[in-house]
Image 1 (cartoon, rainbow, N blue to C red):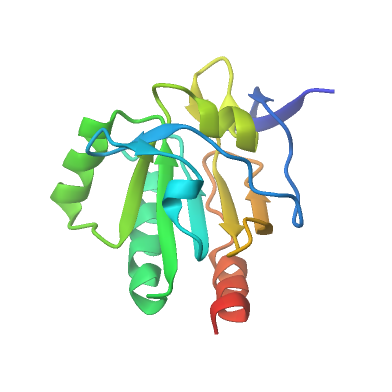
Image 2: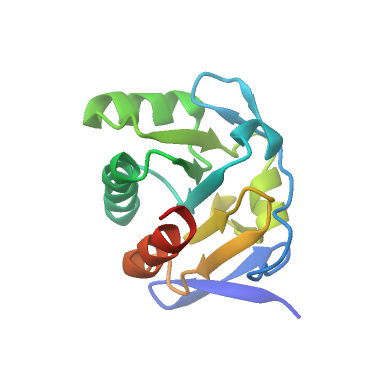
Length: 168
């Protein structure tokens, strides 16, 4: 059975599995904004937030990433990542333009491995849907949110509540 998200009400098919809380966090292969390889293992062993967005150059994605950049300053023991299909150069430009330095960027454009393994890849458009994943120190998913409408925000309060529960 195919999974979908919507963009302004239009259904879009997603590739990959629908992950749930308690599932092991899948590995992935991507690059950071400096073109260095990124995998699940390279993100460390602590609590991690993966904020998945279609493109930093859209209003909701822009606000979502800035919101998590602000929250990251309140949770120094948590690593925050933004995942998108944007080119690493575009991610770097965006971060520099807006002074975003608490969130690390992951570009899935080359392999689409994150999108395929986490079930966030919009196949026809080759971009990510909007989603949030919180991974604990044992690489187990502790929070999963696939936002049903790409143009809507995730539930920030629920993510922050989960981080307070996990990180204190």
